[in-house]
Length: 239
Image (tube, rainbow, N blue to C red):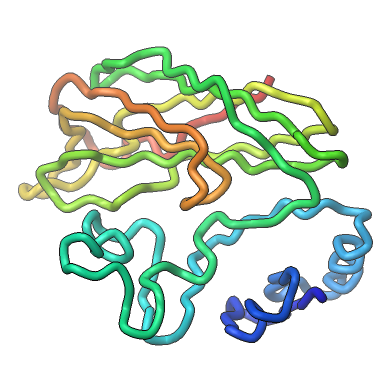
């Protein structure tokens, strides 16, 4: 049994979790929404949408978001002595970036072309994505970056790039992201945009919680720049 939800906000239902095999979050799709949903249900279109937000289990979890400050949210369990709330999990019902497909994908062959990078340089992050199912599909490869140790409180991770990869059954493609250290710049205690020396963790996956590959690079020194000159996302190329 499949549920279809039309609304301006995501559905969060214990009943849906218990009884439905799948749930289509259609939001407000306008006059062609019915046709689009029907095509997905009948298999004419393989869904590839990903959630643009984290879905709370109930109002008591709000606010809940994937890029919460490091050490807070559902990552704070070890520091406060318990992994969950009294009556439910710390984690969202469905995480940011989550989405289903009629096929499956594997990630492999992560290559980071530089282990150390200067603030004004770039590096490339490449990986191989393969459709391991029996039908054609599109995977949304998501690149997250995490500042491992920083002088200011930073998000536990940040979406810094993504790529739509269309694949036939058994087909595989290479995805290459160009990453600039200034993507992880932040406003320091003096109100200046700072690229900080230190380790940046790379996470590649199908959602913010479904991370398939990990790596890292090291920024060799501190630097400051004008906010308007920051890089805002990692450009992707597909081969």
